[in-house]
Image (cartoon, rainbow, N blue to C red; front, side, top):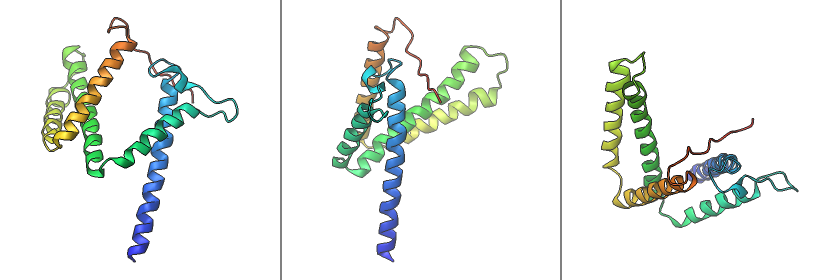
Length: 164
């Protein structure tokens, strides 16, 4: 029975990794032509009509992940998710209160998003110090890249367009 569950776990992990790799590669490919990421990442290979450079980049990063402790990796991914959730909550407050939207509701558009933000900040305290360092470094790199592609924040960032 242990062998069955181990095999099912490995198959599930492999399927999940393959799905994640395919979706991340598609996102990287879509961000290339728009200038959000370097343009060569958005080029299709003539022979296979696939984004070979995007696939190679995602594959290299995935392989590098094999050298990282799984708990540490989960913690860093959690940092990214908590950052996204925090920004979503704060964007609701900005849109409905700072931009003064006409249909604002105190409970839904102010109180609940602020509670959500407070909870994500509280969850950040459960992350390891290393995860916070790596996450903050990654955040700084992202802000620096945004500054680069917007010429020092003087122009709007490129908009990603996805043709389906």
